[in-house]
Amino acid sequence: MTGIRIHPESTPEQSDISQGHAGSYHGGMSAQPPLRIDRQRLLDRLAELSAVGGIEGTTGSSRLAFTDADRAGRGLVVTWMRDLGLEVSIDAIGNVVAVRPGTEDLPPVMTGSHIDTVRTGGRYDGNLGVLAGLEVVETLAAADITTRHPLAVAFFSNEEGARFAPDMMGSLVYVGGMGVEEAHDTVGIDGVTAGSELERIGYLGSMPCPGPAPHAFVELHIEQGPVLEEAGVQIGVVEGVQGISWTEITIEGQSNHAGTTPMRLRHDAGLVAAEITTWVRRLANEIGHPQVATVGAIDLHPNLVNVVAATAVLTVDLRNTDEATLQQAEQALRIELDRFAKAEGVRISTRSLARFEPVDFSPTVADLIDQTATDFGLSTMRMPSGAGHDAQMLARVCPTAMIFTPSRDGISHNPAEHTDPDDLEAGANVLLQVLRDLADGAAV
Ligand code: GLV
Ligand code: MN
Ligand code: MN
Image (cartoon, rainbow, N blue to C red; front, side, top):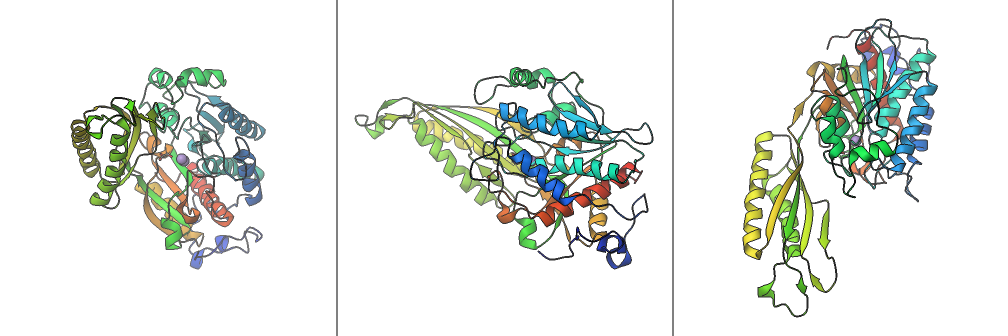
């Protein structure tokens, strides 16, 4: 890593921050020396939350949305919110919003992310954004500073979409992009509905959806890819999120005896699932960067050694920053499915699980992040996000942008996910100053 570090042990008077980078610190709206979050407190909370649903022998967690582990993680974070004296509300899709009042009765500046994880989740994905938000609040409280706008720290339900599609479900419902009933009726990979599970874990809240639009939204998140680390840059200034297309494909063939059925008589759903899997890799290679394509789940039935598979259900995840190219990839998939079905004599049907167009964030908020990080002596890079985020939904209703911190070896959705504590701290300090400036009236 290159660039100037924020040294937690130095006082504001001694630090690179208050001296300004080449004397250029813009001072924000508050025109006061910047505050710093408590690095150890942030690391301790990240560790404590990761132990909830912790995956043995790793630093990662398994808290699929609306499971018992999700409930336990929620309980811990809500306790921290209440301990900070925040006013906590829960809405009809289980989003939790904690508010610290401002000096004026204005719409809040909001930060946050999610605390659900994929089944093999890391310690930082989502959790960093929520717990850094609590750090911001606690740091301001300790300094006895009240911002003009209230500050809100939120965690949105089911961001991952790994159990109930689509991803970003809670924030999508929050901004009115999906009805609450439709979200509740979503059937998960284990056959139960999101609404029944939400009720079971005690998070079917009373606040109506859609929720009130914040004044602005800023989300801190780990990059989850290799770009910042490879470039040796500390802060990613996220200008938007690429488009996401998730399709569930069901292949119906014919189960038959693996020993007696001649190859010419087979209608093998397993074979077609494999062909689709290799084809999507070729598709991404042919389109080229930034197209990505993944078959992440395959379910075969009856899934036995000596039986030709009767059915296969698999998922295809296609993403691109360019909407037209993403549509071309989707069209190519449709044509190829038709070809595979005819060639093997199987029936193929599809169901869209998620479809989000690429999103552009607010250039004004992105500029503020960039300027703040630069003033802090941190190196920055403008970039799109490869992963989906709650911020892409909030961008529909208020000026929004994101701050990225590097991910070691670009690994995420894996318990080995790691971000250097210096980078976590730097990202949280940028978040603190940006939120403070926005809440004190920086232009959006
Ligand atoms: C959410 O993490 C996604 O990008 O799939
Ligand atoms: Mn995330
Ligand atoms: Mn994730």
